[in-house]
Length: 195
Image (tube, rainbow, N blue to C red; front, side, top):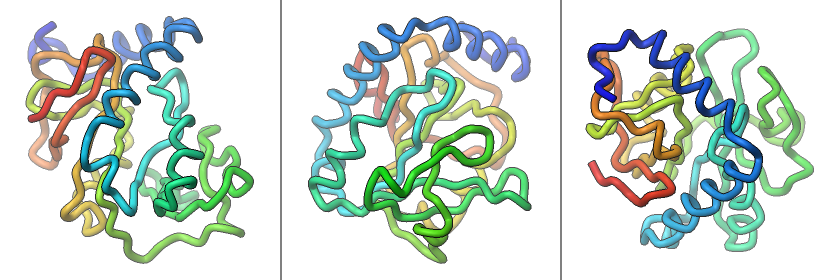
């Protein structure tokens, strides 16, 4: 599929429809293979602070990583949508499953009462969801700009940024805007693509 001929809105709709059609067993199987590839990376094994997402709407399932990271005493950072500012997300440190509950848009996130927003953070690794990615590392999201804004900020400086996706979400080329920040790598069930 060559993304440049397809408008972003149509491509987003097509990829979301394919992702929505995945059966729970397919999500589990593909996600398991993607996480197995991730675990082979030195940056995964050496990281002391990791920012990752929790899945929604059949995204690659990162949930199995929670207990693993807490068991390794990695500082786990999770995004939280800022209620009064659309498209802006804060980051908070979660230390156990009890601190996480559904928030805006039904996405599980750290609860503000137990996990205050961090003014600064310095993750070694950032795991990013997406509707689609291209072979240059560019990402297609839901269109609200949450990750675009975050990745352009100070917190992502020096971090390895990796997109997690199913094989069909990797296209040859996406329409890219000047503010789009490419991933360093994309991991699918088929392997790791370094950009």
